[in-house]
Length: 168
Image 1: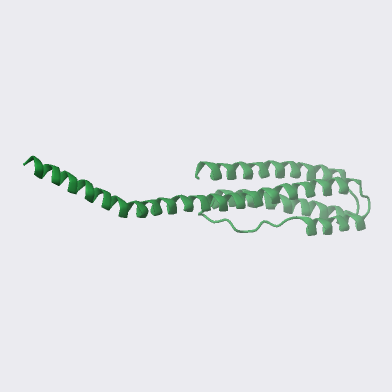
Image 2: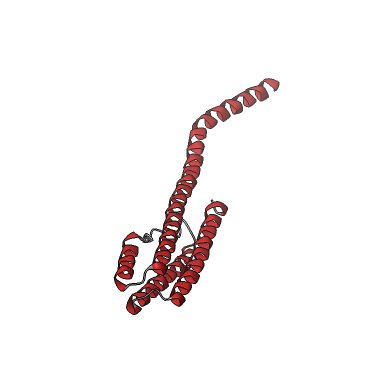
């Protein structure tokens, strides 16, 4: 009887080794796919985050420079040149967000807010062109808009950081 239990234990152990040999690669493969997918999503989120952050930073710098130049200029032609330069240099936001990467509703609202502030800057510059001079009231209004734009840019970055690091 003791021999039978030894043989049964030996057979069960041998079957466990064989079963483990065949199942281990399959289970490891499934786990690797799961972690690779997470890594791919994280990389895509990070890429998108970096592009948006770069766009925000560059646009804010451009607007700051343009508003500074506009304050010094006194004629319509130079103001028109500044506006056309601004249109060429500013970076457009690529619409590449996906619900897979970020909460697009909240992020989209914040980016739209940033773009609406850009539109106000353009409108202020056009008003200066129409009047032909750098009106101090408009310049101070543009500086206020620029400060709001910086704040909105920071909110976008913070929201993206939350999405990037808390959900990954």
